[in-house]
Amino acid sequence: MDSFCRGLFILTLSVVITSCTTVTERGTKPQGSPPVIKNSFAATEVSHGDTWKIYLEANDPDGDMRKFVYNIKISERGSGRVNYVHIRKADRERMLGYLDVIIAPPETAQAEWGNLTLTLYIRDRAGNSSEKVAFPVAMTREVKQASPPSPFNTGELKGVGKIFYAFPVPRGD
Image (cartoon, rainbow, N blue to C red; front, top):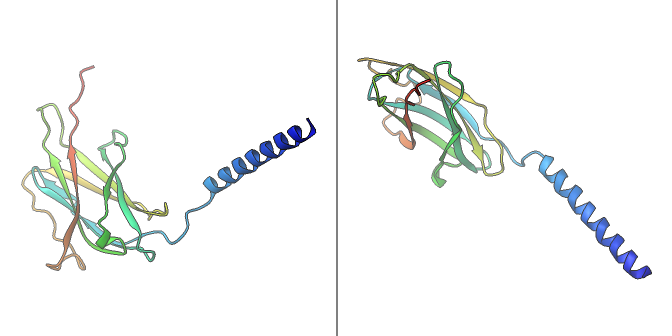
């Protein structure tokens, strides 16, 4: 009986120690360096039906950028849900390119075009995140998107992902 109690005590103690270790590990900060968005640009007005381009220059000293994390907010109606665009292996250390944001027209005359704000950051494989960057845009008629400044005005930029967005249809009350 005495050896049974001793064995039960050791088993209970090891479970408690393991549980404490697990809680401590969850509370630790991610290892390595976070991604850095060095430069960004997006036009502040876009015509209906245009593809809006979000230009980004980013790097991660660890070379482990994993995904863009973004959400789109319509006018003053709160936040949209969080979405992801995965980053290609070739772009995980250094990236210079653009995200295509394809905005579908409203399905009904009651849906409004309005203004949007796309907020994004980059998360790496270790769980580190870059600072957030917000891009407001007004959906207008017959406006030409502003040309990007340097370093985004070279012909060697590549698309680094696509975001698709459809305006929600208002619900009847």
